[in-house]
Every structure is written in C-alpha cells, then in structure tokens.
Amino acid sequence: MRLSGPVERAALEKLATLVSFEAGQAVLSVPPESLNATVQSALATLPVADLAVEDPPGPGSLRARLD
Image (tube, rainbow, N blue to C red):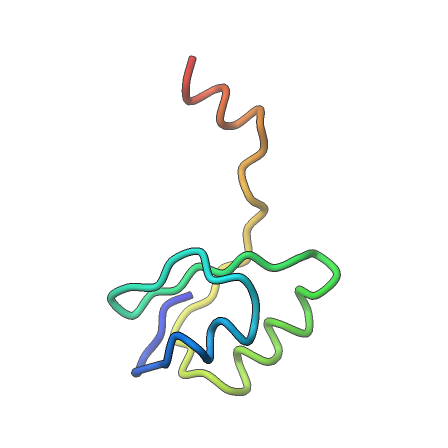
C-alpha cells in the first residue's frame, strides 16, 4: 500500500506481517481469512493513498522466472 503521510512501523505490524516498509510504501502479508478485516482496519486507521490486494506468487511463478 502507498501511504500519504507518516506511519509508525508498529501501526503496520499490528495489522499483519510486515514484509517491507520504506519510502511511504508498505507490503503486508495477510492470511486470506483476515483479509477483509485487515483492509477495513488499514483504511480506517492509516493515511492510505493507494491499496492493492494481490495473491502472492506461487511456486509455478517462481519456477517460470528461474527457467
């Protein structure tokens, strides 16, 4: 997600597993069963400018890049 203002790392870590966080961008790993609640919480509590929900690349995707 792209953030439009400052956010403490701890605020993101409360939502889900923080994969990366730099330069106003954060990547979170969220279990499918928590996705709706996590998105709702992020939008309600953080200065979210843009948000994308994507499936993580599977083993087939990684294999295709390595071949």
